[in-house]
Length: 612
Image 1 (cartoon, rainbow, N blue to C red):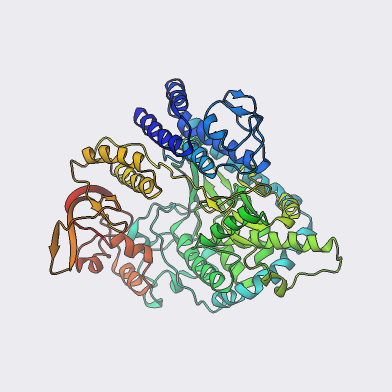
Image 2: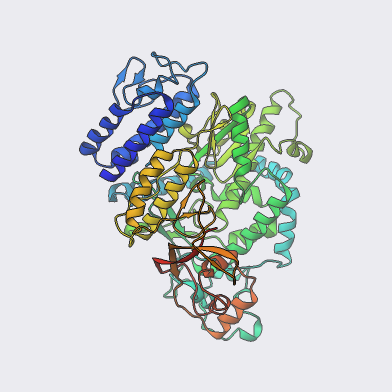
């Protein structure tokens, strides 16, 4: 913890110099509170200060109701007051022309350690599981009591909004023009890598739409090559399995791992949906976050666009909501329903339960389905808004196209015109969804979306420390993270703090911390200074330097001859190529039937590496 406090102090001093203020009292406050509260002050309390600060920008006034746990003097917190006086008046009102550098600095100092990955306490883990269960209970209650008129309205709007994009996917499903694949991650039945191509359990509800002899093996000739189970009474994993992934100190990320066979076909539907949508419209995105950031920046300038963040987004899209939106495409909906898990084993041995939501985070189709449902709900609100002045208004495809560049959905990051915000809030509440008010902005000049934060068009996105500071090269993830942090700080112009980290990294890396280009895989420092040629090679015609780099080892696993044939005939996955890139020379392509999955061993070694 002392290392984190020291680094924070160096950064605070540099930012204070940039903003014309003395941060020494703030550094003393952080040191004293960390002694009493531990690193929870850095990782939980300061990020909470950040959220209160953002709300103050949104409301145009700082108040003690927005920031708890800190003393106030007049209308401002005593902590960071030197920076805050450049943003607010002494009674808490937002200045007409606040200092953008001070806004950036307050957010940087309070958000710096908010995303350090780490395991939560058991109490916080169980609270996250309880929230998952409560959200699912809410989904069940919504489906039980919903009025049929709401479902009909969703269905009608979905036909107008999604019809031009999804009709071709519906045809693809009808003609079996799909490409299944296995993902790189874990599954409920604990099959890894190549083992997935010999999947043991193929559920009955999946078999009814995607027969195993047509999708699980190369062709009918190999139908008897494996003992296959279709019955849920077999001694195999038949339910999805919940797991808790370290996220922040305040709460874990709740993920549900799907059975291998379901995930295999979900990947086929996900690919078809995301490809078709991204080709057809800019209203929904899956791979490029830049349009969201661009629109957020625009909203911060002219206040014409609102950014909305949803709480528990995927956990609150109910089964009937998804069915209403997608049942207008019967072939696609039948396929999605067939690949859906209806039961889950909760983490921490808290039992199992039926799932009322359509899909949990971890399902390959969760992201595209929730995006389509959110988009339809937004246009349902737009239609309702126009019907206030024109009762006969009916949304048409030409109306939907007018909102390209005004409406954008990327997961639970939503952007809409401010004029529709009230109706969107009403519709979302009607559907049982929760807007995260502390991360949604519409009134002031601050906007955030997809990792981009803006104030009056200026980028004020903080740089975040993602891991604890390492003390040994054996702490591979921490070393990589610290090198990345150093380079981000340097490129942002925080050269004093970067120099502070240079000294520590040079000792940690035993004097091997050379200057490299931004694209180099070596653990080196980015700099505007000249990088001398350490070694050249005629074979590759590139400059090399002696530096540490990360070496990964793909785990050994194999499948049967039938499974190997299936893998070779399926189209290669981009992720699989990335996993194998560390295998040298021609063995890169020849080893995939013997080594697959995510790396089981990661280490740092010293070797000659390209500078660029």
